[in-house]
Length: 373
Image (tube, rainbow, N blue to C red):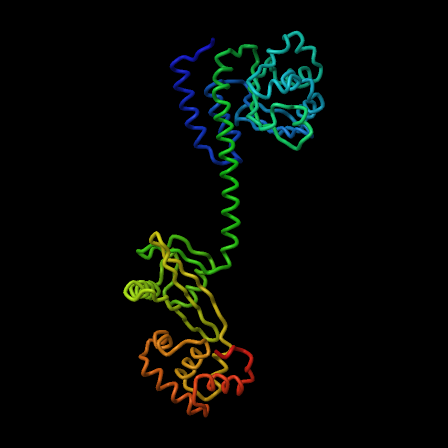
């Protein structure tokens, strides 16, 4: 039984380690061939993907090595069944085989298509071919009726000098090549899923921070809004100082007054406002959800003859906020809010919060704009 030398074993081990570093499916063929060619050198190393139903084959060659012309590929497709390794499927689907395992050199030269119009043109006298494991590879007849693909490698030499040592190395390498290829496929799917997720998040205002205020993730829309509403630019993922101060205050308040919910931060700008909500995640992360809202009602309230602060108070009342919440939102005391409400009631000729809301909406023709609650 053929055995490997210590040097071959060490080189094989190093090659396997390199295989498991391959993640890019687009360059997998070239990357794997460069590893393979160091272990079993050949004159034309090829990575191929064959579409079973159509028998079309896509080839990848190492840079600097000869490849196959379009005419040669046409001939190979035309004489697909003439290939000795293909002819002996499914046996050859599950191991490493040479053309010379099945035909003598004389018989090979008699193959008008496969040899005379294909291999001879690049001076090739032997091939060693193997496919990566396929779930249906045990039954070629069934596989041939599907849209399956066969992924494999073909090593070409100008002489019939492949040894059993070469076959053993490739046999041992074959399952690792399959796993590395599967890993690259899985990695590509994850990258695609991540890209789709990124695209779906881009229109949203979302930030993820660590407990030190360092930005771990931010969507483009969040950056646009932060730069529009905060004086300090947020380029290079820098969190505005004012926003970080608010976050630390909210986190501290929540810890000392559980189960207190974090009030949203509202920053007004002409007819719009930026609403920022904080969620403290387990695992030392802060999530910020940003939303820009238009303020048609707030602008309209200015027409009622109220002061700017009274307008803001009445707007908060219409949002269903109590005096404590309004005081926190406007950074004033509750007694100040009570005084503003007394002035609002007097100017609108009402005596309660509900009457104030109804009267304001009635005067502005917006009675159904907000629910009365």
